[in-house]
Image (cartoon, rainbow, N blue to C red; front, side, top):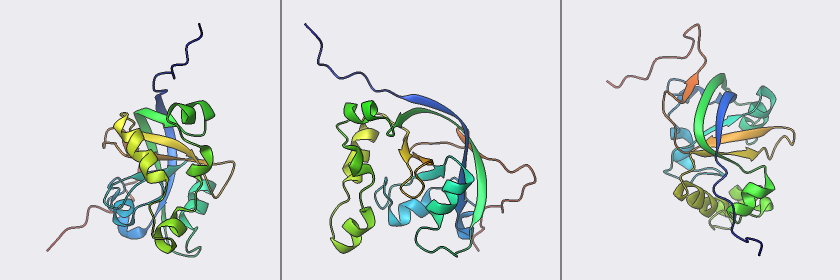
Length: 175
């Protein structure tokens, strides 16, 4: 008799560089996730910190400039070594979590801002986080050949900005 049980969580360990283009106001805290928490995003609810990074420079640029193409930004490469990542570009991984791949590309801003409803990606993220996932590899909705890494759990030891010349500003000081 064949087993119909779904496989255990197909977690990956990621060890490679990713890119971000971030608003200059966040360049003093490139690992905070506060910008994503302030508004929410495709893969995080408002109030939930998340760190979005791209597989390459071109993908980082198109992801960042999707709302306002000419706004200023600061590029930064990050060296990432993180466990418990799910590859949502993979249909088998999506099947383990009952994710229909088109949900990942839903028009989340239209759903949230115009339809005043919860984007379907948010309950997906809730399930993934409950399973112990630190983050996910997701297809870029702006550049088909690129992909993104979104993290919900990270530390300064698992994600490090590559800044050999100390070009990133020091953390902002309050008066």
